[in-house]
Every structure is written in structure tokens, then in C-alpha cells.
Length: 40
Image 1 (spheres, one colour):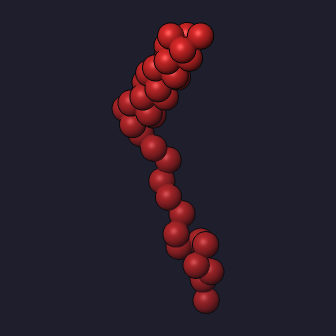
Image 2: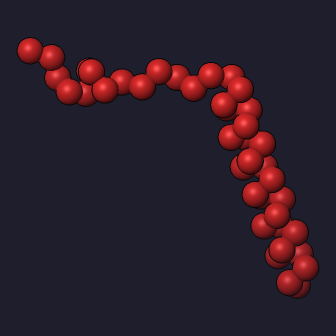
């Protein structure tokens, strides 16, 4: 009998998906810094 955790393993994300996520994270960070800079 196999465990559920062995069956439900996700494959790693591909290179393009990681690049899109990193880009979105950077842009969100820049937007936050810009908003805080304008508020000061």
C-alpha cells in the first residue's frame, strides 16, 4: 500500500514559470517601494 504523500508529489516548475513568478515578485516590490516613497 502506498502513502498518499508519495502519490501527490508535484513536478518542479519549468524555467518559464519561475521567470514569470520572479518578474511579478520584482514588480510588486518596486510598486511597494514607489508607494512608500511617494507617501513619505
